[in-house]
Image (tube, rainbow over the protein chains, first blue to last red):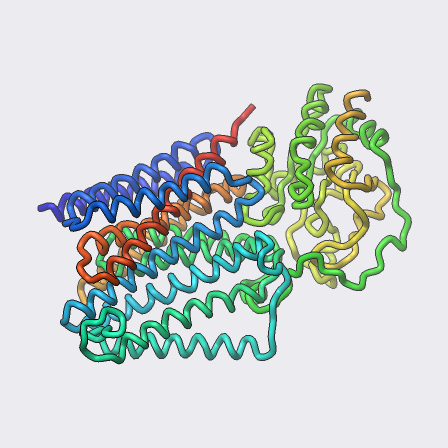
Length: 475
Length: 92
């Protein structure tokens, strides 16, 4: 009967997880949706603890308290700009936990004697493999985002061939394991005697998977991290789901596949926003940070303005659309930007924000940074909504964005042909706040800078924004 | 084979349900969606608790405890940081 109670509570949890995520469809209900999902998790944990025979409460509770303390401190003190790194680390731990559980099942099956059925062997192998790849891959992604590992793609000769061979080896190790079953055979691990074959095979599987995770992420450049973080997010869910197959546990499968779906959808959206295929991101070694292509920029005349002139244009506009790019976050200028917008609104100017999906280091990152700066969420418009507004917008203020406003995307011969962009050139005038005319990640010049209705406002985003605050106040 | 097939049914249907609800999340909330989903992937904690709770062999226990610690970091940290982000999304 206890088992029935557990299953019913798991079912309630599953419903709460799905309905909790559903509430994330609006910023107004999102917070309660997250609370609902945490309640679902709590219910599942409590019923698991109560209805399973826990032999060693001290160890279990100590582990929970330690994990909760570490997670809580990280969550409380992390800077919002560092959110992609944090999500990468959490992803890694999720994958690591799934792999650890699968490995524990493997050892236990070996220790207790009877051989495992092949299907259980397969699920253990898969769960360990996906979990371990997620773990090491996420740690490399964290290192890249944090600047510990180089943001440049790391490549070596025959990399794809090597990766493919390694993957094949891991699969062979896994298949042999699943075939052998895990009969009484993990002697090297548990020291209990028996066949000494599959223990080393298992260790080879784990080691191979860990190396594979590293090799899959190091050739990917810093600018492509939104795709990688999304994909690893998906893996961590799939790892949890496969662990559910190992343990015959429905709630693990349901929650895991929800996360797997979320990660896949975000991965697709990011690829679309960057106009790239997943294969191109994974193998293209493209997203080079600060790529210095041989582009001749600044050969044509531009109209540059100082803070006073820019302030005049903004202050006497009827409507302003702000297009923030990652440069804004790097300069930590979002709070100054908010001040400028407040001053403009006090003067009766309509201000809105147009946020491109890849304006940041993970999906939706820029929206979080603007929300942190107290920008009301109903002023944050996504690509399609803001594009419908540019025709009737007086001034567009672009801060630290480049490729996502490059009209070359409409030219079928351009390298960024077809990339979804913000059609800022349709507004009456455009102010571009930028350090120089240097190209963005795509490494191409931006025609927008040379258009008649474009004003270039050169300088560091934070300094220039502070200037702008003063000038708009006086305008 | 029966049991495995049921698990597969659940996996496929849950993935489809996930696709439906998640595709309705607006781009504004994609970061909280990701960190919230992340916290949910810490569901592996259930597996870690079951495994550790019934562990006799030392290695099983070591792996189980490692699983609990990692999954709890994921769960607690993930939900907390998502809440921290979502409370900043206000309408004025």
